[in-house]
Image: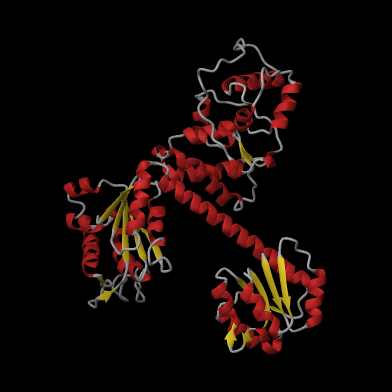
Length: 481
């Protein structure tokens, strides 16, 4: 991080220069007006501590100038009681907060450390989100086609209908359309139409006049008005009543709504994205969904395949959900046990992405020593590995050598590989050492002696493999790779 500390107190600046101890930062300091402008003009600044008298320079607002050149900058105002109004004004113009003087070097370093941690977390989250987006919309020919369509329709105001099984990521996709649209800085309001009581749907969506229904004690603004200028996502649109469908159709035709109990029409600029897991064609045949509304919503149709048809996305989603929940539950996750990896990639996920998210959170809570094991997964997920006899003896390792970002997902055990051992009699009990020896021999046969592949599949380092082979008296033939 590049840190700027500007204060007219020369002794304070000298003290900072002598005592600053954060090695992962580059420090810029100044104690006069003439030195400040060259610094901010020629350097990118991530975090600034600026005394109130230096916030106005040559009739220029320093807060606005810094934020224009460094959009993600955090600005803290250093102030005394006498110039508190100047600090308050700076906060209104975009400064983040203030520190009352006298301020110590330790206070500045502690604040810097907090901001650094927040920015690191934010950038990591943004990186993972972009990876999820790429994988979710680009791993198969079908998803690449959807991605291409999304980029074309996002800048328009056209309505979009998203279909797919429950939990397949319809709201996520709607949010992607919104983020890539010209409305990205305006509200994105999501509502599950099936979760609102039927007698309240109209007032929730379109608002209501005071006294228009029992319990209505004040004028109520609806979700359409809340989304004005932005996007309204109507999930499970097939659940809407006939009366509400008429009102929705009227809005799509005229861009006007009427609150319940009012005659006055209100014009709104709202883009509608609808989604459903129902077969709307069938609903139209049954008379429960209006045909004219269907064609209004279906200007562009995106159909999301279920997660079981998008297996390549699973590793990225697992990493994303680990990142999301490990801090929530105060856990560090460094590795996945191979059997757990196998089970997670082979499970069919009838609940789609939402089920995968719940499974990963479940596993994080039960995990120990930074490792997600097969037994940390729900029983029905574990069966995917057990049915394939994929129970792998866990080989202890310095788990911090592997990070979540480096997770590799194993292929199904190769049936052609010859296992250089015989099955024990039903009453035979092998020692753990012999089980480990047989497993390594089996893995060597599967990998055809390729030690690099073997280490990747077992999740251990080359030195650990060498030590274990030496201890178990396993010899390699030929030149190992």
